[in-house]
Image (cartoon, rainbow, N blue to C red; front, side, top):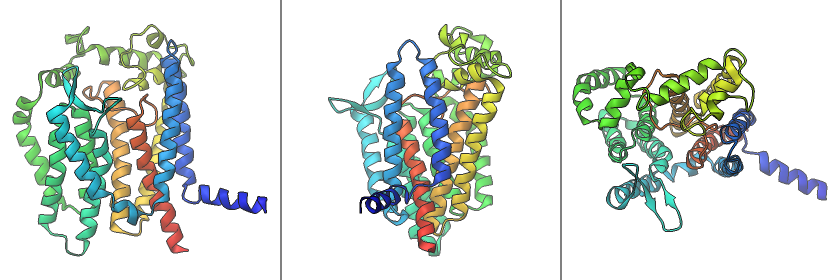
Length: 368
């Protein structure tokens, strides 16, 4: 009797867990935790906090995976409305830190509402396209762009260009997978190129400086160029096999800024070298390939475009962070998925993996 109960409990526990996704995500998390430990060796309570963040993220992943896609779709509209209201409240009453108004104070803690939109925007747009699947017209794509533009502008005005880019990318991927014509994409690209001079004037001074520093970091080696210079030194000094765990000189002499958050890839590169980087990139590629496979085999429009958006959003995180740390993209606040220290982004990414698991496992149940 007890054995049957335990068997049923185990089946219930793993029923909606996709093995490949969990394995790859778990391996990246393990690599990330060891790297956070090294990066914060003088403050190991952060490694403990990150392990708790990962536990919360895994629980959130499991909970989301239990909901079938049809039920997840119902969260799209209320979550989007709540997120936009919170962004407006941030604009009116938000806490200002280092010149940016991104947080709402709840008295006992602070929250960053823009993180909610990373999930809310693709959910909302996927629900919208699923609702109008039988008669998609140009006006539906126009409405979707407007729904995306509202949170994008509110987040960019905080200013938080990194999060705005991630939210905008997640929404664009939904619109793209919903069948946006290539002619429209080409037209938008041409319009964006034509508007680039105007967009340059709209950037904040520090944002323009980051772009100029990307071209020539040595123009301000102790200021805006410091991050790029130190991170590229750390990456290059790792060589083929790295200096070894806890042996990174750039890391432990504190030359690398934000070494446990946005620039954790520089820490990992210094300690693990080219070989470690190759393994890490391969793990990310396997995770993205698995996500695209789930999207290709999805049984509904909502599931297909949602899985595609989550997967390509993950790719955007990885590409932007590694490009930023390597000096080929401007410095923006984008964490490396499941590697960088932090709770909110980790939980958001884990929810995304949970959505992929939900789409995959419930599709299999339907086929049976």
